[in-house]
Length: 522
Image 1: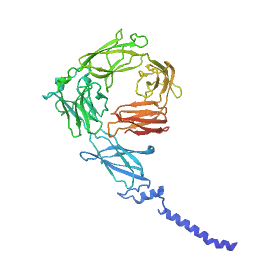
Image 2: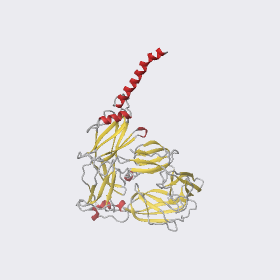
Image 3: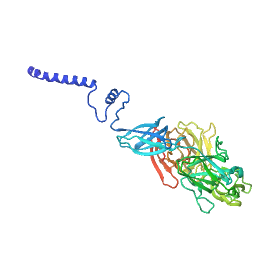
Image 4: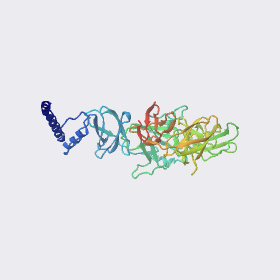
């Protein structure tokens, strides 16, 4: 036994020596590293490359996407935020500094969308790419934005506003304005022609004649305002009065101003008179409500008229804008009625008889999750969100938790809170059998969903957010606003983007509890 132990002694000593040598070697920075690289390997690399101009080696599974933003005209660097979006919720943000340079770490071989949002000085841009190593630095040219002065004058050079000034509250419909679209619109008065005001807007017109903004020093003679484009040229700029297209020009991006020559005779006979008779559909008698007549040109927001129904349910309009318009009746206690009418210039237009239907009412309570009363604004809409408000939005009285909405259609409607403090979580109510009492809306805190875009184009004609029940809980057609922050409850949602004349694009989203998300609108 003693002889056997003496024979194994050299083997044990060799093992101890090997362990000591390995320990000393590792402490000196030696050893093996895997392909992925461990924390010690990264620390050693940073220690070894601490001199000026050194770069940290990229992990094998990562690629550093580098690029530079420059002005397309001058070549000067552009400072702007940059976002990279990928599959499975991948999202990285960066900032191009004063030198226009940005860099973002991304998974290798990932298919990404690089988005540069529109800024005050430049149009945005989208670019699809694949993160491969080695990644060649990108150079992205951004088209500059600027306000284009608009000059309206007669053929003899006089300012149009001096020869034929706008008059009355209908100035926006009886005096020329501008429409920015992708293709030339087809205008009236030919019967059956598409209405140009229904086209997707790609810009905004500002005019002192309309009281929007003051003219700036150095503005050209006969300048009436400025055009602000949402989309980089080429775009079509059309001069429109009411729903009639007078002229169209294409903007290529090199213009310093937009100039139109207008014949003052084209502005004559732009007004019309109208009369309408309103009765209750159940009693055939005039409705008790007298106020709530709204009128607006197609494609524009309607506004309430300073008129009321007489004791026979009739009302008359004088000097309104001629052309295609939408007449809305929002009489208290009745379902909203919308009728498209064509008002012929220089005529007295009989709009006929409109039968209004008594609407249903919804009354209920707003409470917190702990049962305490909540003061908030309540909205209502149809299930698809297209008819909002279906009734008149109301505020719950201060210190009370009840609400009431009247004039709702006798069908399925959504009723929910319109308050940034609480999540969009409407209640669906079936009003086919009549009014509903004791509806209960629970005010819950939500998780933030941010909708960003559009970047390179004018944007979506409409954006809808559908919940797991396929109910439209939010809708917007604001092409100008670039960021929408919504509070939603955790769950599954569908983001639907509907472009004018195109198919709807849908994106699915599973919103986790307490974790926000960002969706890029294209």
